[in-house]
Image (cartoon, rainbow, N blue to C red; front, top):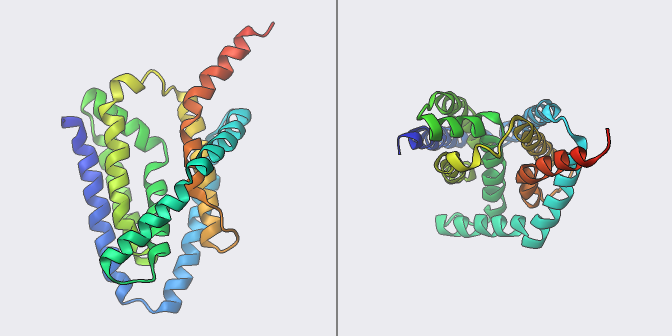
Length: 238
């Protein structure tokens, strides 16, 4: 349980930062909020483009994106998340903002959970009880959640649940998943994740209407595809 402290702290910082962002949101004029929202889209695009350069195996990334999107479409994760957003909005009795809640939830969840700090930090916490990486990530997510909540709204608060479950599971399963998460696997998982973040940026900038949540399963496919690719290469004559 000691290793989970980092996840609990990270979850708390997202909630606290999100709450502060919502307070700021109330005093921001709509035209300013819209401009900041578009600026946020450009920032997210920069994060995605910079991050996806970590990939080393284009074939694995391509196959992961295709198969992952097929899986996501069959399950229709995007529809389910948007339905959850509408449900939450109805419970909050504010009406008419369900899609905004879903967008805030999806966008912030991916931004908070995609990246080496999440995987490596959670593994360290689970294996050695070392939460230093997650504490650093918590400070970063605190600042980010303020900005996101001030533009994306209350959906950012609900992303804390995703952080809790995603990082918590990696921490608890660290002993079993560590052998699978080699440097090569983590690099390709990050690459796929950041490509999806670019999709988020395009949506925020109103350039596309991608169902990015349906692409999320692609993030996990390199866990199987990288070893398979290496095995196939080992069978080929030198």
